[in-house]
Length: 460
Image 1 (cartoon, helix red, strand yellow):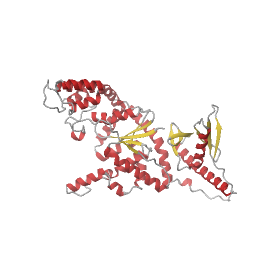
Image 2: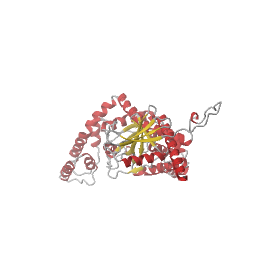
Image 3: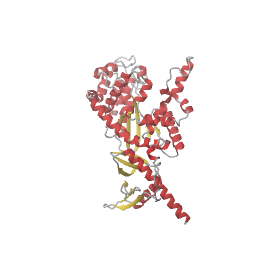
Image 4: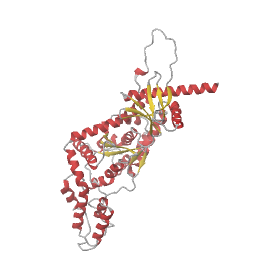
């Protein structure tokens, strides 16, 4: 079973070594897991909450996209897209906003911290606080729920936002009477490295103590490394590696053998200047080839745009049908589906044939079934089963599932039906949104026919 994992990347600033070691490198590694369905998006709507510098936001989007691709993210294996290219996300945000309690948002840590600062400074409680900051948790919930992500890797300071997304999803499911959303879980990476910056504190743009990842080239990186604060021990004196920022950064890039050799050299009196040069050479050995790819990508922005648009198409193939289903659920339905002109002469009442499921044995000996619509068209073809009991159990479950409970997505130009997280049936469709709506209607009709048949048998 695939686990869908979703990670947001805020598009403000320029990536540094701390971002690479703490977030980018482990995320790209995780995307290579064949059991993970990885979604990575640039959270450029979120960036607008923190920055009103349009040029900075635009440049950051480009640099961050190039960074992730240069580091090794495979857009064919993962779904890589910009948040602002998915119109279903802000639409879903509004649907979720309308079931979200204001009291829940009042308790959000970021909003409460801003209010507390204002009160401490004897200002109006909401001075300088925009609605974007206040609504941030709902937008984050929409980011997650639009794709029914199972896990969301976050720092401990973001756990509350995942809990709020669960609260909002449960409220929506309860209000509209179906399990539209799965409950996402926060995934805390306990072993993710946190690099110290030039002054020993956590590497952060807030402290202006960062080492650039790509910006400034090798010279910019070396210049920054040479500014790392060390103690006053002279060459020839043993150095303490337990409380050394320089050694901690080296360890994040080196093999265990290299780390042991470096520690031995420091304990033996290696000078800090030589140690900094050794750190630069080790980091550059890993970062240099990636920088070359980064610079090549930055020189070809049209190619990156093609990658991002392809990623957005993959993402919308999943979010689009879900939002269409939610529009139906909340009553935003097309009038064409509910209003029809009255016939001049009432036709003779005839009972429409219900959808039906037909089982068969394939040429390879496996067991499968087809779902036919009320008009006789084939709507779904199941995956093959070696065990006829497994095929029968799925057929029985499908006959009572109903359209609202069906997990339908579009993948590679076809609609897929999932149960328990696994694809159990597929259907070709030229128009995904229309195909999903029809399937839900036919599944509702099938469930109703199954229930009617069961009631008739019970009376007999």
